[in-house]
Length: 469
Image 1: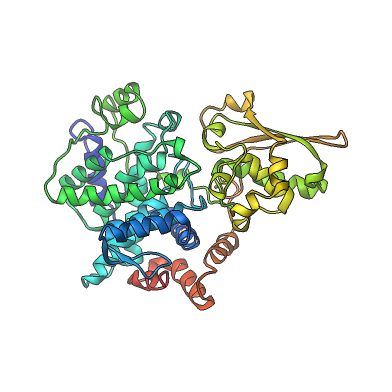
Image 2: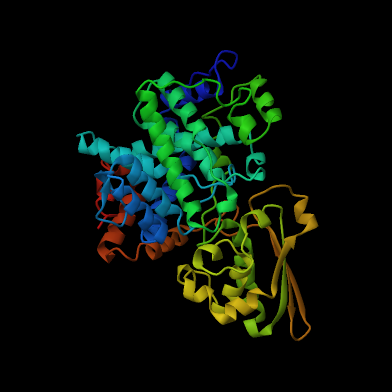
């Protein structure tokens, strides 16, 4: 692959050149494996989330706005235009907070990028140009590569500043993936990504509400709209990322923007793929990833010590710096709030003996046993964990004091589902089958087979035809 001249090309130009030149044959096998897992995971959690209130609300809003079209809305007979279908499908993938996480961004790549790529692929097929599984994989991996290499210039400061990084980073990633999928020229690709940078946003103070899932939807729509605007001739700055008052400065700091301007080496898109070197965390539990090491640990301790809620005097949870920023509900009153509550995760495990989709309903959150136990679960930043900085992996220290006087101390640095503690193939498939139980058994198995053999699929219609009703 031709190496861009860093002295002549902006970061966006380097990215656009990579997007135009990359081919499926260039991709590392490991990148394809992770991408297939991510696509399988996204489809599963989007089917599971397709009947959530936020998804129903957004679908009705799109319909009321006159946005009917020909593109599939997952789990529905509704058809919308491409941008609005992708918006609703992105929210479906994020509504349960069960979708994959990238530590490059501390955000959720698949639930934003994939709805756009599926929507465009469906439009292509309707116009007689079937989009293959290989084309989807290439566009997705390329989009993630562009996004995450740029995020490395800014993180973790962007998250530390209070932004919901899913909304910040994945709009221009969506534009990048769509440009690669459609072989858009480098200038238009630059304009599309730069326009998407102006549409970035999403604040963490809206966690625990329907707005968080909407962030995924608004972001994919912004990315798609930005490409359409660029195709129409709307211009933007080639240096929108690194310029003074540009994206890096506004969403991170002036110092990091200056560092980006003064780089003496190219960013290196397509070298040491981030999706391989950093990988993804796939979720075992349907809640914010900040809960997950705690979920693993408390369930293990319950089994090891035969603990019940009746045994507990108090539980002290020591978290890292991001913990209080993400896990913002100490005493949740509904299922949406409970996904962002460490207290609920701990109480849920002790009262119900598991932490699954079934436990995230208002009735179970309001159970008096849960409400009582949560008042005895305390969360605070642990000073040793604080020294690790603003990380997303959510290490935990638990101090469990029993009514008997016994004290149990335990800790966990990383959740199952991370590359260092990976899901097995069986884990991934079991989660998918659990999430898609609203489909018929025949369709679930057929859909799973298609996704496992994605690179062999000639047209993605074989997938979209199954995930509708």
